[in-house]
Image (tube, rainbow, N blue to C red; front, side):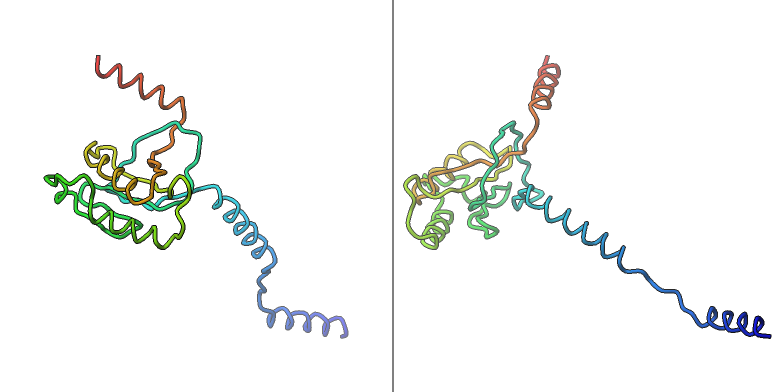
Length: 174
């Protein structure tokens, strides 16, 4: 009888037992995932952009630094997410500088403190179809408000793609 009692006891223990969840391997996976995301997030620099802005392409090897950003779309001129001027209002304006942009840049310069020797750094992120007269006004306004170190944001392409794209364009125009 002792053998029968042992079997019954084992059957009762199996019925009352609930399935356990092993969290150790799950925690290992999440730890690896978090580590992977932290390492890879430092390599990518993302500028705030709008779907209205199509950046030109470039083969530059030097990465831009994080600085104040002016975004130029078809409709608006935006500094760090704050609209400062409407493009349609600037079309007939004969003034060499953009007043709204000048006011915002002066405010940003005052917040930054003492002006460095070469001036403050700024990035202009404009659509590749931005007219030259508008870009010229933006650059003049930046220079007159102590933002003399200007970078233009572009899409980075490899040298192979740039060469292939140039050849494709030449073939299309012939």
